[in-house]
Image 1: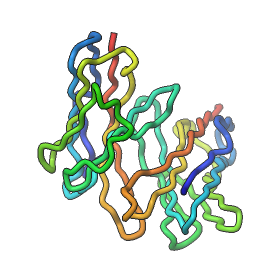
Image 2: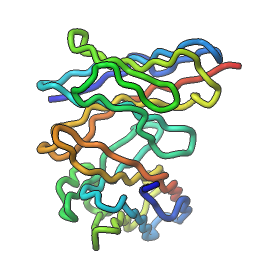
Image 3: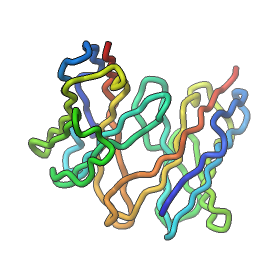
Length: 115
Length: 115
């Protein structure tokens, strides 16, 4: 049963620290998405990649967030320096474009708390 | 441009009674539509999808949805609610595969199931 995996599942850190979240997409999926979910804003798309190349990162605060895909099996999302307002659940999703539409499979999320 | 509107932010039903979660969409072309479910502290799980084949789509856990082009609707139904159905449900419009892959999420409907 292929799944998207994310690590860590929970992270508590102090303001100003660097945070790195990792995602392993489903093998063979060529598109990876990063989302952030909060009670106030709901689900927001931060960035996404196709074939490891960034396609759109307009949803990401560029001064502190960065997203990369070092290889086809790993996507990373970094926050440096972290701030309390970054506290949220961060989801990774992967997908494979099927003619006519996209289908995305979500990981379990990383719950980030910045104190 | 595409958009999706979930007409109810919260729905409450009694166990064993029918479930109806309403979703209207707007799209400049024939859309692909999904319903995702998110249980508390979990990731999003694909419940069912419409991709221009049969207009009545069956999903997991007894859910189904009917695509009605004339009404621009894609409502989610289940004949008999179970306690385990309590969750947040998202109606989603998918772009065409050549338009980047950015899913468009509704605001979500929280389903409560009373014993």
